[in-house]
Image 1 (cartoon, rainbow, N blue to C red):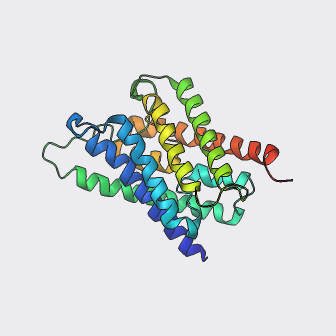
Image 2 (cartoon, rainbow, N blue to C red):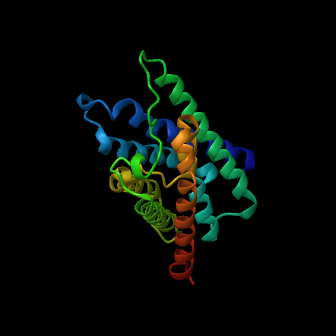
Length: 230
């Protein structure tokens, strides 16, 4: 597969992740009569990933997340030469998704940007969780997400079920961590929203790059050390 095709798939996949996942939070989560809430948002993120794993996974591997690319690289599943291009495509795709989300959301009279589904800690945490709690949460959640991905895509795993495991894994991660950080585990997703919110979101963005990358590296090292086939 040509690199340009892979990058296009990563762009579209991350675009859909941000538009679908963050869009559910911006448009529907605040309307109790729709019955979505944070549980619905959790499933929205899981469904966006699941649909594109089956839709575009055969082209790019369906990373849609810089932390996933780093974790697969550390785990020996991804080539070094493609790492930076993938991350760039993911970030640009996320920004494009957030841009479309903003254009739609701002079309409503009385629109206020607010948090715009951005990630945060302390006073910007949905549950008021502090920096250390947010850091631990994002590291551990990303580490477990990569463990699921590495395991589900292992050649020894049952074929055809990786998308379900990964999608449901991301859903569970959101159910756990939305109250803590509004759930990142994805630097591209965090960057796309922070650019529009600015201010506090940009000031706290560093955590949502550092913690997911650290978690992904840990998962790659652990899987490679203990679970790779001899």
